[in-house]
Structures are given as C-alpha cells and as structure tokens.
Length: 195
Picture 1 (cartoon, one colour):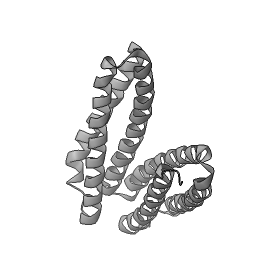
Picture 2 (tube, one colour; picture 1 turned 90 degrees about the vertical axis):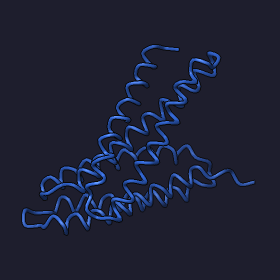
Picture 3 (cartoon, one colour; picture 1 turned 30 degrees about the horizontal axis):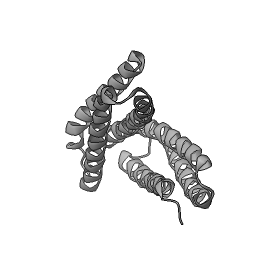
Picture 4 (cartoon, one colour; picture 1 turned 135 degrees about the vertical axis):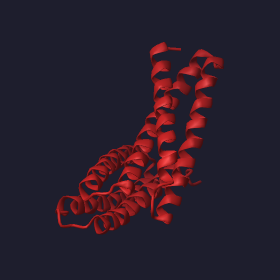
C-alpha cells in the first residue's frame, strides 16, 4: 500500500479525532437545549463513523493488494466526507457559541461554504444515480439549494443593528431545512434499486 496515501488517511483521521475532541466539550456550552441535543447526536454519529474508518484503516494491511486498493479508495472518500462533516459541526458549534453578530456571521459563513460543498457533492452523486431516483433527488437538491440561498441572503442582509438572537434563530431554522433536504437526498441516493 502507498505510504503517502496511508499517511494522508492517518492524518485525516487524526484531524477528525482532534476536531471531535474539541467539539465534545464545546457542545456542552451550547445554550439552546434542542440544538445541543442535535449537535450531540451528530457528534456521536461522526464518532462512530470515525471509529469505523479507523477499523477500515487497520484492515488495509491484512487485505490482498487488489482488495486493499479498493478499500483504500473507499476509505479516502470516507475520510474526506468525515472531514467535511466535522468541519460543519465545528462551524455550527462556533456559531451557537458566538457572542456577537459579527462572530456569528463568520461562523455561519463557514457553515454556508460547507453546505455548498455538500450540495455540490450530492449533485454529482445524483447525476451518477440510477434513472428512477434521479428526478426525486434533483427535486430535493433544488429545495436544499433554495434554503441555502435564503440562509446566505439572511447573512448578507444582517446589519450591525440586527440582533444576534434574531439572526441566529432565522439562520438556524434555514440550516435545519438545508440539513433535512441533505438527509433526504442522501436517503434517496442510498435507496436500493426497485425490482
């Protein structure tokens, strides 16, 4: 197995583990209980995914060359996805802990960039999807894109007189809509072929 690839995978998983450790304590400081519970569930899901990726990494050495190559490709995609999702979690936690409108706008801007990447990735997956689910996924992604643009609009229109709580409440709702649409798209893409 390529040592450069192994080093990159190990480094990515170490980065994910570090971000999860940081988020672990920060989530407890989030004031809104519903948001705190949702962030904790996300943190737990990402922790399980990181552990599964660690297990895949340890299996690489025991696999025959061709199987190891395929497993490494899967693992590389998984690590990349984990890094993106952990980055989104970290930005969301920073936004929830922000004490000024400017700090919140910065953190929410990070979330927007992360969601833009996720949306683009889902569009690529949708373009490669089976014909019978492509239209359903496209409709969900269009809805996701609309929520994304609405959140971006709220952030752009916020002024210095905009209260942090009103901005946070509006953008939190819109990011929730984006998250639900992303989950629906992911579920559609994972749907087994109909017989």
